[in-house]
Image 1 (cartoon, rainbow, N blue to C red):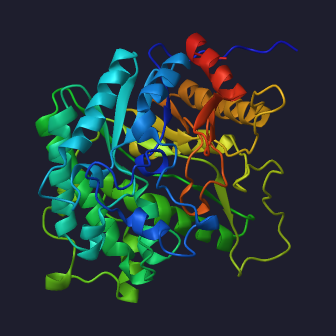
Image 2 (image 1 turned 120 degrees about the horizontal axis):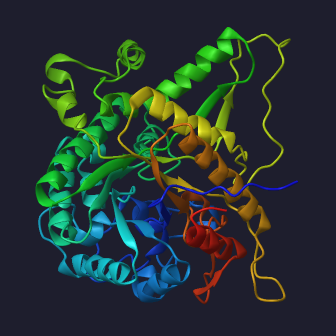
Length: 450
């Protein structure tokens, strides 16, 4: 059987992604302030094995070597986040110039290496003083985010043209509704106001970026889980639609000028979570600010969620998960990426789409030969890249693909138990070893296909 080579469009952006708290370390150095994640990891019982991001991959000190590693792997682009508390230690007010200088040096090194920087403004590390004042429950945090955006975009906007405002706002909402992630508020009634303030912060940041950065391209990076009914029953179908509304449409609809989904608002009104009038959190003009046109929509996608309603009959053929799963326990389901890309294009017609995160956790370690033979990750990426190529052939304007992650790193509440990296990291010595998948990816980039 002859295999067909899949070639991507000319100019397709191949990159890798990281987040500040997961790799930088240096949590209390050079004027950096405390974040909600610093407080979370230093609270007993929050993170597996008591792991913290205090050192992580020590990228703050080893960034030159990491840029050289990216250059050697042939990356065309690098998506990274700026740590808000490294720029404004208390969230607003006095600027920490050492923090600004760190990112300025990083950007210069990336450009010198021929790597295009894509900056994410917020990847969950809210300055703790803002959280102490209410965090995303407080509308003043929206103004603080605009101030932070203004500071860092003035500093870097002459060289960085691609910006993402928020990473996975739904995870931030869940961190208020539950106690899994920082700041672990654990009150389901708080979801609507946190949602709105996050989306308003996005909208105001878009205004700031358009004002400060000539030739800017700005987007946002929500996560998108594909929710599929466990059977052909109406009950399962309704539940899948509701989960899609709660985790996907609540952000995408308002971003694209449709307002919040009616069924979502009515549900929260019945629960008393969506006040109106003088007590309401949605103010006049907010929805127009949120719906500022995007230059691109970025999407983080890993797997699907099969939902089953307790009221569904038991005698219908079930939808079953594939046997193949990553070490996170997530199903390997490449067709889900195609479906997500097609749905987004069909339903919202963004100007461009990027896959801002996709990848797999596998625990392969260096073998006797000193190399990391992670054949499962190569197989995973091959199938997901093929799904992305199929979406392009179907007319989806997919402009780039950022593999998660450049290197193994701190995986939030799971600590260092998961390894998503193309590059293996020895956390004791900070030695980096490109895995077989990194070498394979280098060839994909060089050939713009596989």
